[in-house]
Amino acid sequence: MVRYGICLPYMKRDYDRDTILAWCRAIDAGPWDSLSCGERITGYTCDMRVLLSAAAAVTERVRIVPSLYVLPMHSAVWAAKEIATLDVLSGGRVTVTVGVGGREKDYRAVGASFAHRHERMDQQVAEMRRIWAGEPPFEGADPVGPAPVQAGGPPILIGAMGPKGMRRGAAWAQGVYLFSMNGDKGEIAKMIDMADNAWEEAGRADRPYRMAGFWHSLADDAEPRLRQYVYDYLKIAGDDVAKLVAGTMTRSNEDAVRRAIDDYRELEVDEIMFSAVTADLAELDRLANLIARIG
Image 1: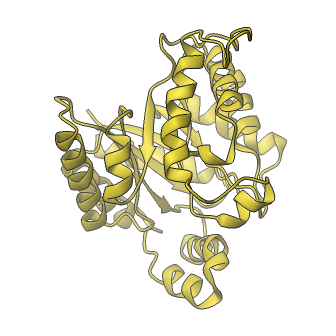
Image 2 (image 1 turned 30 degrees about the horizontal axis):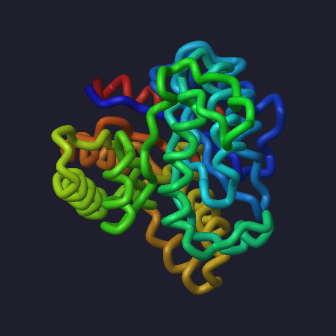
């Protein structure tokens, strides 16, 4: 049975304390299986780790999903400690997605190297798992606590869109986090094929867990707000590119969102992650009603 998750609208300027807590509590009370938040440094965004810590503290049921941790921007030891603490705070409800990201300015802002980030991430995942197993970071050091609630640490998904990333993730991830901006069936199908092939080439008997998301809005004035959000997100790539992509966004009414859900379910996606583009609580109510009608 497919699961459903909600990505918090962490880039909205009107996302204040009361709205953040209301969203977290509404997600926990609704038909949702998980709550996620992405990571960006530059631009107007809330911090992923702090936001998800608040979410873990005010929820009891849904899984808490950093989506995704841009791991090469961080120390593996710090990340392992943060993720384990989040697992403790949530009572063992964390699933973490990791990736290399694509925003060089975010790397520069925190003083991290953009070079060799794929290789560094492989090493960092291995180091995090050693930390979670209780090994000290170096000879003579104390182990780094706390121990995660989930034995061996939370499940790790690889956030990737191409075959190179999929092949790397097949060596250490339990699954994949996929994203199509407009919920395009063909794009997700291609990524699923790449992931399945990577798992097979790695000699794995299991198939990767499939989490996949897309941008949408069911708020009032949904279409212009969806396109403005996408434009704001992508303008770092240039005004022309941002305008072009924003103009292709269509998941701004119930019929369009339902078609995306049907497509993802047909592709046997295990968990659909809805990325709302406004901070209106009406987004959650309307999407929950749609899910209830789909059954």
